[in-house]
Length: 512
Image 1 (tube, rainbow, N blue to C red):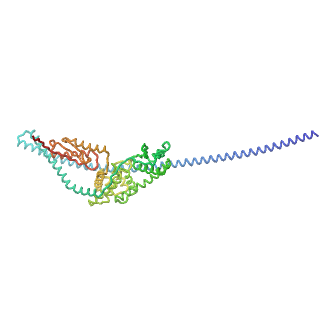
Image 2 (image 1 turned 90 degrees about the horizontal axis):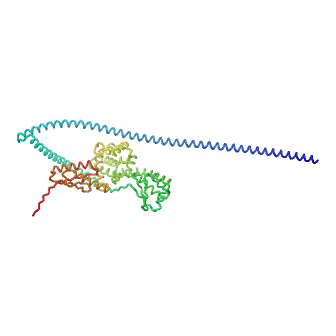
Image 3 (image 1 turned 60 degrees about the vertical axis):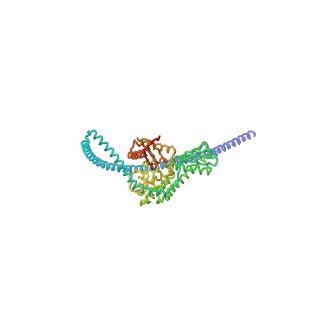
């Protein structure tokens, strides 16, 4: 009975163990299936993430490639535009060379004709000289050498007297006919127009309300000042001057953009690289609009018909440029008024004269990439903008770079000289002024027979004292012409310089 119970207990225990083992195996199988399903889901998720990352990378590379292609396409278009402009300039230069070649051929033919006439006259003169020499020998009984020397001296003295008298007669007659009319026209124009004096600088000073603002402008380790200089293209000078920083640049437009941007940043108080770029970009856009407005306002001040937008934009840039401290835009308006007034005095079309005068220096606003004299470059630009040919020639020829057609270039040139030489229009440094005065006196003393030379009236007149025994009155007149020619050839100066040669004889006696 005990053994049977034991066997039954063992059997039950074995059955329970087998059941538990089956349950454990079933549970392990379910856990294995769940783990396999979870691993499979993670693998699918990672694969999907990898595919999405690959697609995003491919899209990013595609966008970068499109941006690169767009930049390259823009550069190609810009290069094509520059090549077109240079081709136009080369064609214009070629046309000028062809015209010059034809003019040289015509002049050569004229010179050959004149040379033939000169040879004929020389032969006649030689015959007359021979006849005169023979007559002198017969009358005076002098030797041929003595007669020849006396004859040459007489011819030389007579030629000098005739040349001096003829030159004086021609100049006096020209002055008599032209001075009164020219003086009347120019004085009338000057009296009817006046303008303020001007100043010149290549730096701009920004006043700070607090010295601590310097540190904020500089930024941590100088990052703000570097970002500002990179965005504007100007140099920011932070020295020991209290409550001030200095903006330095030879480009006046950039300097003005930097001044306005710095003022706004100081007023706003938020000074960091991102804000600096935003403010500079906004000020640059506003400056472009302001430049066009300045050009249009200048046209209105000069009483000129409305200008095309590109012409107005280029003209407005002259507001930020100066020549000898004279604001070029104000100078252009002044030249327009003066040219118009003189044209009206002469009974010509004052509108064309004013338009040519207003646009005469527009070539100075073009980039240095466009080669050539500013008058010719400006005229080519205006021709492309369909300006009237009379205006284009007035601009191109006002410095005699091309031949003038009609009176417009002469009027613009005269008005340009008046505007530049009137008192207060331009300023020059003391060193430049002293150098010009010294050069004037040096040129005056470089001629034989000159005793003293003084530059007076701020270099507008050169008075030369000559030795009365070394030069005659006729020779003094010729000396004045030679000094004027040498000054014209060696010096650069606005307006005119008057040369006065003084020859006087002083008789001194002492009563005892």
